Length: 476
Image (cartoon, rainbow, N blue to C red; front, top):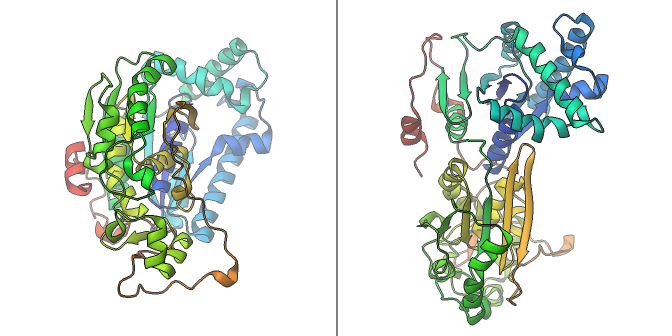
């Protein structure tokens, strides 16, 4: 998939302000939507070129050798980023560094402008000392810069490094730039010159982020009557073992996960998820968007029945299961698109337990764990198991809690087929069960820069609010 749209999200901010956390979150979000995105972390280039265990004096602005070597790392990262745009047809790159002076930002704008790359600056300003301390402990003291170093000594060194950056730090005041300022990530946002559909989507996502510690729990509904019969879709009730799981779930929450006083429970509108949640004494919310993938004409059928009725279509489905859409129903790509409002709400809330369906939880799990589209439809989300995710700067920590109640295994691995058995994908025949609805690896959302052409007035500040961005661009 090729596109003439190229956007560089350039991070700005002092160390320990959550820049890497934000970079990784934006990358995972856009990748989940099928937009080719990559993070270029200047710190990694600096460690590769000049070593990891450098004292804080290396970052002193008066250290001319250190300044020269840091510029080399910045230039190397920028060079790789430009090559990635031009050679790999990248769409969004995230340049993760402090970029804390007007001179550095001007250099980036000039160089990227020569390559016809749009630049969106993302400045993270943190004035909450407790958040800064937590970030130092969680991220920086476990980073490659401080491996095998005494934690107290590392904290002193890193504090000194922050002081060096603080000495020359210049917050963004250049009104000709496109930027968003995130103040204490979630408490206040300032935006300027946001132009274009994709830039607006990135900004809207950033405005929903927070960095407060929280946990996200997933559980499929208890085993259903349709699970026992091997049928897909439908709106069946729980089986006897499924009801037993629903009775055990509150105890699992209390004994294994702790007493989460601020936990909220989300379910779909289907009976099997609602029945599973009945004994949980927490606030509950039903989401139509969490309903299972619509199997269209195949709803209520077994896979054996589908294979018998639509043999060629069934055989080709695994060639691109993510984009395969059941006739009259949905594809995994369709589900990702309808789940985006759920993801936005997940990012805004604290502790959440989602009781959902296999395809739905695969899509949400893939967002947090950064799975590729071709891998997503084969993620194992077993019945009678609670999955706990704890978001961190570089990803999510995962734990699984299995309840000792038997259930059928509904996971279907990707078929292994010889080249001779693969049929060429063609337009669907009359009476087929579905079709491949887009080219593999193409973005799920439209990204054309022509949707919103650049304004001529370069000094006009954007006045779009969070509400207006949501109403204008993001209705589902």
